[in-house]
Length: 95
Image (cartoon, rainbow, N blue to C red):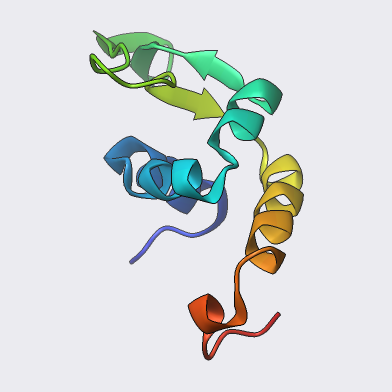
């Protein structure tokens, strides 16, 4: 089953697929400014920590490796960027 909502957003950000789109749209920095930046991840089961990792932004990248941003804040940023695109870029999409 494909994750949806926040889980999908988190998965896309982890794979940097979405992050690769945000910069060219000019909204990457706005999302970083609004969100919470982090580099240390921890995986737990119940109260026991199973794993910890540190993921710094890669050399040459202008933004952090990870941000947390509620969809409530992300959607308006995305909508503004989407509406600013030329019509030919959004062929077949509903505005």
